[in-house]
Image (cartoon, rainbow, N blue to C red; front, side):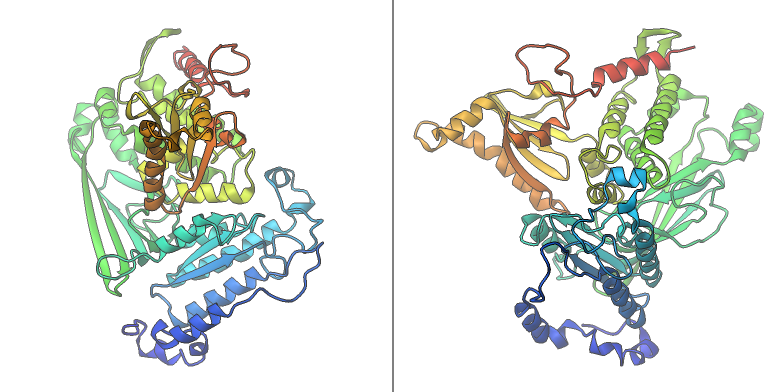
Length: 562
């Protein structure tokens, strides 16, 4: 409803498209009738074949309709995908079930199952570019047990800022709750989102913007604020995204200009001629978007930050934000996966970490035992340890579609949510008192406690062996065991709060110690106790991965080398 935002000429051009696109007020009854009468396609499909799906053509036609009728006006194109595209442009797999969907191993070897990948990526990237140029977002809801081709369709959401939801079926709670959140409204009855956003960066002379990493596309706008060094989507000072909400986050990367570095290196006289150390540096963000009410808004955010001489390490250390730095590094690492091998990215993370701690730690040369990190850097190495083991860089056990989904989420979420993805949170519930945070370590598992793991994508309630045994015997239903009943309920209530507030809705898992689904917890824990350590009385993880302690020992040894 509301006034047509496109003007008279666009409205005149609507004549043909009005057969397909109408305000909900004019077609609500007809649309509801169509949806209620929808039935499964009766056309028979052979048991040895996949259904015919022309997803690539469908999204191209939908994007063309929106381009023609609502250019440069807020719009979302929503795709509900129940399986892979098997015919036409955007095809990701053949119709015969004998042809398997591509895996990470296939992509690495570039064998026959990857023959559709590059052509499909090219098709979806072209559609995404058209949608981004028109200011529209493309959402993908992929609900199937098999892969749907999210790897090939990555550009649709990554370029336009659209939502990506992955579930096992459309009856699954993950899809239903995520779908409700996309359509949620604020107190005024407007959708809790904004459309057609652009972000422009202006800087003072001492800073240059290297680029942005997030679900955005470049506006190719040049200015004196643009750096020659390119990080992420660079060579521009402005970016666009088709949709934003309160959780949307874009990482911006800056560099200090060579002039400033030369001035700082020249000593006191050079600094007085340039910008004095300790002076203010400025960054201004111009964020323009269309509110869900139809109004266009511009938000201007100006940031002033005191700078210091790069040789004054103590001052630089005081301004170091470990959490933000970890997320910024994670986004660069994920962006690198588009063009580099995972092994090379892991080596790059290691080199950057060694360079950082060797510069800011206190130690004696060639004496690892003297190594000390200040509180400003103390938890950063463990973030990098968990990033190296995360699903963003370790693809074993995940399909290409799952990896694409995980990486998409990191590119849009806030620092707090991104840190949960990198280093999940673990709460312990016991009879000894209220729930307490515990180490993300295998030693945190105990028979008489319940653990609540939040990985952002999964919420796991893990019952210890004794707790599970008591529950199976029904003690919580017997009088006199109210404390046990409350202990069982507490983590479930906290898990429900996480599920209610998060988008996309995480998968909820209840499991017991020594149960098959316990792998969701064990795969995230630091393997401080393994089958090779022979430590008695503790849960054991069968893995060859190094523990955090071994990782830190290696880091100390390499950092203090002459």
